[in-house]
Length: 204
Length: 204
DNA sequence: GACCATAGCACTAACGGTTAGGGTTTAAAA
DNA sequence: TTTTAAACCCTAACCGTTAGTGCTATGGTC
Image (cartoon, rainbow over the protein chains, first blue to last red):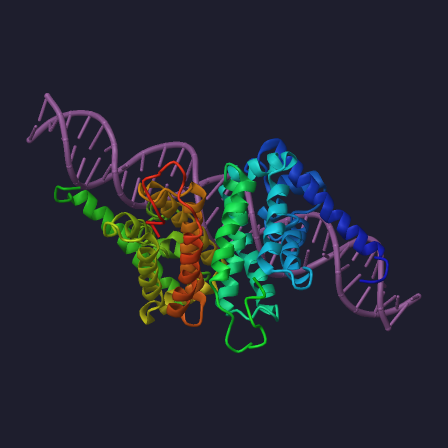
């Protein structure tokens, strides 16, 4: 990881990128359902099996930056300034993600996703995975001392906020409104009794 | 619907039931992934196309009572006692659903679902549909006068409570804990300004 | 009772995503 | 150099799902 990447890894990354680019281009040109995996493979000049060695499924070709999303969420929790309350940090990150996804440049892709049940379902499933990662990050925060259930609930609510806001008429206002509810929900949780070193709701 | 069902409809219902029973039996005997649609069709003595004329997908064979769930949720909202606050009514219904799904008799089925990614994904997708139905029911409640975003958020949170509680170590305690958070979130929403006949948060 | 429209079901064949099996090249390690 | 194994290719298939077509029996109509 620390050495300059060898030719092999560069070639592999190039192949992966070529497949992803080709797939997205074809999908946007002809429509997701009208393009088969065999078309993508032929156009990218690779074998079908190579496509599936880089991407777990046809849907995964569309959500290439999956890991980015997940890392941004967990880092918003783990890398926030010391003593910064948890929920506002989450709110900031979710707002940035919503802005990113509702930008004009992303419109064609999201239009395509909305048009395909398979892609919508895949994205839902992705969100749940992200919520679980986020929940793990929140549970691991030492100074919060909330119950695991409360932490998992917060994670789920935060990811819901992203999803609900994206579908709302005014996404940014929706983020405000939903996080107002989440703040109240989190404030209603009480610190677990086995961490008596937190005199108040310091983590809110 | 009010007349005694004719022979035709009885036969159709019988075929459907036979397919569902056969499928569930085979799935539990050999495992969901080890049983193909062609196996189910052969064992139920029908054609493959007949299976798909009764059920939209292989996964749908497992979640036969889909509509029950959806109706119970929306009715918990629409059929609650007059003046009864919304959130406790939801809490009661979710608790009942969680009890129903965590009962010992349902254990084998849920074990099978947990073992199959396809089934888990299908159930997630089903939950979102239910959340949308529930949201529609809540938005339609006349005396609430909350913003559509707040209503949709409440619906999503309630369905999350079901999902999170089912996975928790103590499901019933989790329902309590999560609905405590939901109560606070809902209380933090303010009635919409265009319904001045609600002096306080009467719908909480 | 004869007649027709249609719902329900069967059969074949195929489509499209996905995977197994087995072989070839080539970067990298020994 | 020699060896190893990762990346890739090809073929053939599996499986869920659907289209096309046609048969049969049921329910309503004259």
